[in-house]
Length: 346
Ligand code: ADP
Image (cartoon, rainbow, N blue to C red):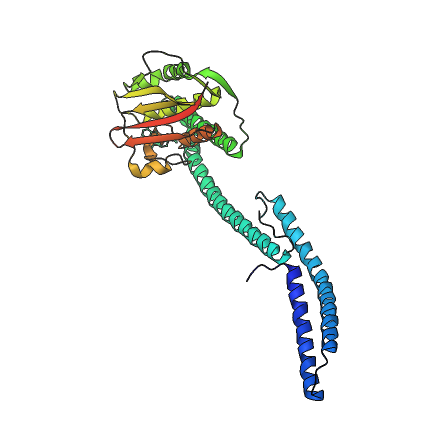
């Protein structure tokens, strides 16, 4: 049906009513008197038209004042929600506007429910993962402490060793808690990015030097561009160091013995592209889409063995997204992995 304005509908209805009354009068006069007094018909038509118009206008005011109230309530409610109001508003067609607003409102609610459902699933998964991650070191500590209390404390052969093992489990818990804290800060937007100009080539050199021990332990060579050129970017120095450390440490953890990790920088228009490539284990194709999810690991036992929390790449992704940048991964199982991300050139 066409979207007639309310005034048009009232006008048409009044004419219809007046026409019906006049037609009835014409039929009555014809059958009762055998003739029609057209002047009388015209007067009756006009007066019934005016009366109907006034009556319908009065009913309209009564009904539509209530509808307008409803429309304004829905509108106000939607203004407070995060979505914009319905862009089309037909002046004088309150019913249509109300319909649009209610449909949009229902749409908002549907999206909101979907979002809350997803959040609920995520919350359950997250809690399950966290408790699972913390359980292992806690049970380990409990085991060592109980053994020590059961007489192990006096046994020179194990007391020191068990205390050191308990300490390692505590370290693991601290790493998990630190990563959880970082991820929750990044996800709640609490963490502010404080960008500045710095030389990322110098930073990469620094990170490689800090991880030198780990790398040489596996005979891995950490290679940087030979020209030693400065590469300036505009980003959060502390957070970018976290990203580089994470990716370089991963390349060592999942790299093959006597392998190589190469860090390279490329000009990418307004950005600098940073690439960290290794010739290690590689990642099977089916894992790649989920690699940046929290707690996602390709090989769970290997990751834990290496002291991984499964949160590293999720943190890396969050940090880069907070910079308005993103990260990519290319990998072939048994050949190696390349992580590349961009940062604003400075
Ligand atoms: P983790 O703490 O387990 O290292 P990350 O989030 O850093 O967690 O990485 C997630 C998973 O991605 C790892 O468990 C590992 O299976 C895989 N991964 C990350 N980097 C590499 C890499 N350079 N080579 C092969 N696999 C990798």
